[in-house]
Image (cartoon, rainbow over all chains, first blue to last red; front, side, top):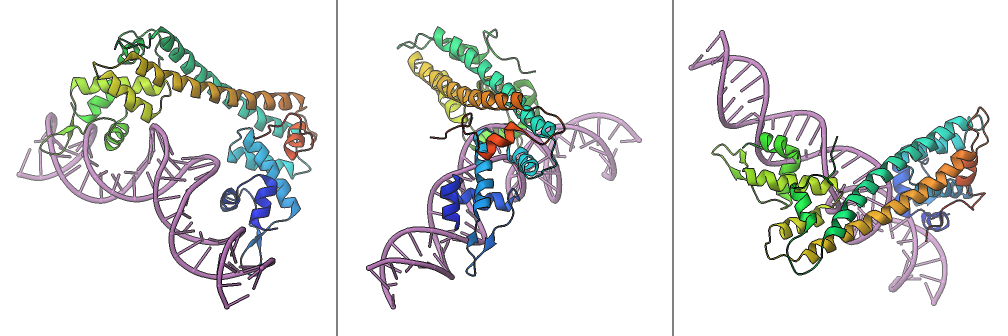
Length: 138
Length: 138
DNA sequence: AATGGGGTTTCCCACAATGGGAAGGTCAAG
DNA sequence: CTTGACCTTCCCATTGTGGGAAACCCCATT
């Protein structure tokens, strides 16, 4: 299987295939005489695993861990779960952060008339006059 | 005011001050004989505006728009509001995306025993067997 | 005056993960 | 054999931030 086929059947772009190889997320692919990368069905399986993990927002680092665990028959499910829950925690904190931003901005936008006049609570708040709805950066 | 003072009183790092200048988010600062950048209290005010905008997650591009509107006494609040609501929409879609990831992963993690045995629904799902809880990337 | 410590300058590198594109080699069908 | 589709490597860009080096500047204390 060429890189194009592997890409099409795994959902990982050829560009990313080469990149993943360069950062040792996947082993170096075999080559034909001409230097073309060759992939097996098993490789494609791993790639699909990786793509799904990325769809869940996991970082390359954590995916590396998960692939390792996946291929280790002696693994402890506790280890897998820990990686997952760490990521859930990160997602949660990111969601909280974004939600706080959105809520603040939504309140300001709601208070803005959005007409032909220049007065606008959004700018007023950013200017720092009314410090109440602004984020306090700890 | 030197860059260090401006940084300390605005909450924007000196590194970022130079960067913002290089991308024309702020005008080129004046210089002393020796080449040191000089900032006025008004400059610091603008920097605070920018920092607050970044705290709300606005991109540099949108901040550039907002700073322009802020300094334009003929502005329409409608223009300001539009920039804000566009960002709110982006935040919302990002939040939805992250929330979907978190929910999927949380379900899987909850179903994982997390003990000394290797069996784990997380890996099983990533492997693609049980395709139900996985994301379909459209 | 000399020296030292702290501030400043520019320039380059790094991150995470992905895409774009150029220049050149290869394969298969016509 | 030519053409078009595919592959290779290498470089660049993104976003916004930080790190660090080499050189220069300012001020105060010996």
